[in-house]
Length: 76
Image 1 (spheres, helix red, strand yellow):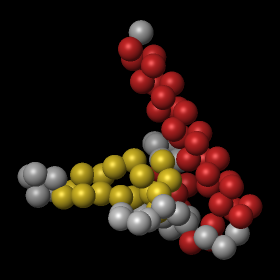
Image 2 (tube, helix red, strand yellow):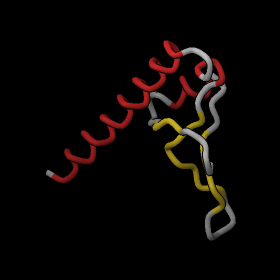
Image 3 (cartoon, helix red, strand yellow):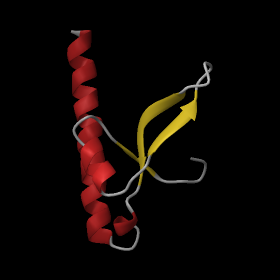
Image 4 (cartoon, one colour):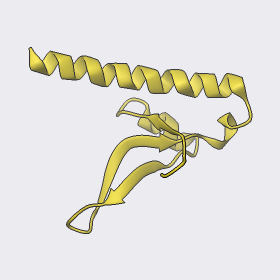
């Protein structure tokens, strides 16, 4: 992940990211098993097209907002 731009994902955006070829970031946990994080690589199609990148940035922002809203609701 070092030096790589990532997008925030959630259960709603994950299928879209997977379909576009993005890879989910994970690391090896203490038990030796992979731990999946809610961050994804940028789909290749977005790297050279600002309009497509803007679409993915919006999807990532929406995912982050949904997570924030859920966390706020849980604190109430």
